[in-house]
Amino acid sequence: MLTDNPAQLKTLKALNMPVVHLESWYAYLLIAQAKITIQDQANLTQEINLLSPKQKRLQMWHGIPLKRLNKLTTVSYDYLVSTSNFVNETTLSKVINAKKYKDFGYPRNDLFMKETHDVYDLLFCDQAIYSFAKERFGTHHKIILYMPTHRESSKATKIPLSFETLNVFLYQHSATLIVKLHPFVQELYEKENIYSNILFHTTHGDVYPLLKYTDILITDYSSVYFDFLLLNRPIIFFDYDKEGV
Figure: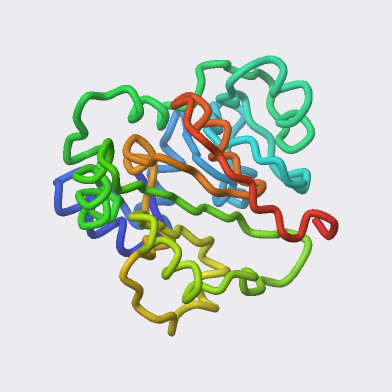
């Protein structure tokens, strides 16, 4: 495994997993020797273009959002993991160049079906928030997860929400809101207050284990809503800037 995220590198190494920093000579050597390269987003564009035609390239991507995505014209893949022919024809083929589409579904959704999550499932999930949600799920206290996505067409701006007012509402109705912002947006909330009923999950963390213990999902154009449909629970679309996206 290769990663350019220092925190993830440290976590994976602590579990004695085979991981190397992406921006290192050893990583480039491994890429050059590989018969197959597997990616979960287009962060290896330059290196992928340098691969030999004999090396297979598998792109797992990370979902099908409602928002507009720019075409990735500088790179192509041998295989792209997808969910259905419908998605391939209407969305993914307009974003990613691939020779073949493999309709396997996204492995991350297996977390919804597991009875219990092990240490590997929770690698990058906020352990405290996860335990909080798991303990309260199925009780009178509701867990709400808010996951807005980044807008490609505009500069990152604050969300038109008063967290102070929202916190009072959540307290009165025995509910907790877990907020997972996009990294570009999180920078605008670095000095945000601490609230009794609002928790901020790290932007680079994994909230998918949390979805199993979420009563209501709030999002806008993020692909997470496709995944959450598998749980057959309420979804609120807060698309406050629909006209401009």
